[in-house]
Amino acid sequence: MRAKLPPLLLFTAIVAAWQGICWAGWVSPFLMPSPDEVLQVLWQDHEELAYAALLTGVGSVGGFLLSVISGIGLALALSGSDWAYRAVYPYAVLFQTVPIIAVAPLLVIWLGYGLPTVIASAFLASVFPVIMASLTGIASASPELRDLFRLYRASRRDTLLKLILPMALPSLLTGLRFAAGLAVIGTIVGEFVGGGGLGNVIDIARTLQRVDKVFAAVFLASLLGALAIALIDMVSRWSLKAWEP
Amino acid sequence: MKAASVELTQVRKQYGARMVFNNLSLKISAGSFTSIVGSSGGGKSTLLRILAGVSRPDSGQVVRSEGARIGFVFQEPQLLPWRTVLQNASLPGELLRESETTDRARAALNLVGLGDALGLYPRQLSGGMKMRVSLARALALKPSLLVLDEPFAALDELTRFRLEEELHAVWEREKMTIVLVTHSFTEAVFLSNEVLFLSSTGQGLVDSLETPLGEKRTRALWSEPRFSALVTTCRDKFEKMEASGAR
Image 1 (cartoon, rainbow over the protein chains, first blue to last red):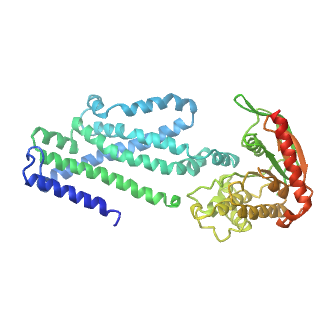
Image 2: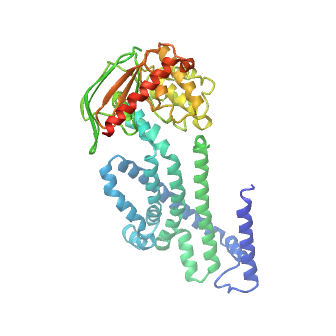
Image 3: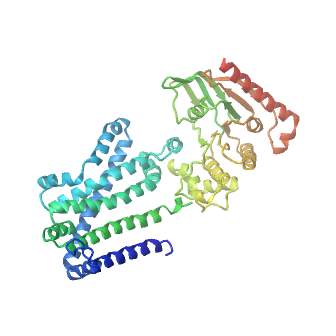
């Protein structure tokens, strides 16, 4: 609890200052709604917002899982062949620099409106950290341990399941933590163009000048991201218990 | 398990342009305890890996006794952090899909004095205890050939003394063949029957020293003049090898 106190106090102070600024009339309500107005929207439109958050959650989880499966799979394939690693690695880095917001319209053209575009957007935003973390993790099994497994004629399956993957876990979980947050961002971007979810709510509220609703949706999207990261942290704490000093 | 012998004939190993050794021949007799000393980067670990069969020479022949079972102990304990002490020591048997793996691992851990630490994780162990687990992991298979790559180099002096005595006691009892790579002349003389000198200039094994100090060895040996004399001879031979390599 003591560790959580400083961020909680800072959050309370920021919200109180924000409320104070709005009450004092220093900022136009059309530009910046007060926290209590955002709360009102959350309450009044809770059904619409909850459903939108659910859709965003589904898109995020879908994209994230796709990233995890294909990211780890690609990293395993690349780590098995030095040639493949050297051929693909520069493009994997280049791929990270492609702005997802610029690619999203293309996804609509290719995949149409709806969930496939949203999941593809979440996937594109989150796959890179999974690939990089997996590659780093896979490389963390020492040459001596690899020798040991070779000496005892370990099968490829045993080497993968009893050495490579467990050894990669700390690095992999760090990557998944980044990827979870990015998957939510990718989903919102996908929803801007592909429709549905909180991204669509933000887009429509923006055109209607409903800044309070934009804030409410942004708040929920952030909450989803934080929830995803908290879940990964929980899994990390549980699965890395033996590593703790 | 009967002790294994290994014979290397005209072995050559090269990494890129660097010749590690050329035309290296060596016979390790069954039941012997051999130490190999040499400069850093001189190929001692490469030689051990070839002896153990985890690395192949570029040319030449390696012949081990039929059915030789090999235990390998590295400089670092190399334990798996998510496995308990017992699970770590059981790993080789588990990978080889052998029966009674856990029982044999338990017996090996008792042998190195870790019978009470079976359920602990590596993070809960001291450096010396980790090295004991590593030794037990190699011993659990009842190896006929045990190779050790500077296993005590990273330990404090007192722990190293204890582990050296324990290793020698294990060898006396189990009578397997042991090949040890070390930087310490006293360790080499104290533990082995024979010390081999590996040149760092690719010339292979250039000298040897027999250490006839008897089978039973304890720390008391250190204060005997014949032990000091052998350590001095060992150092002199090493310096001579280094000097001829520098020329």
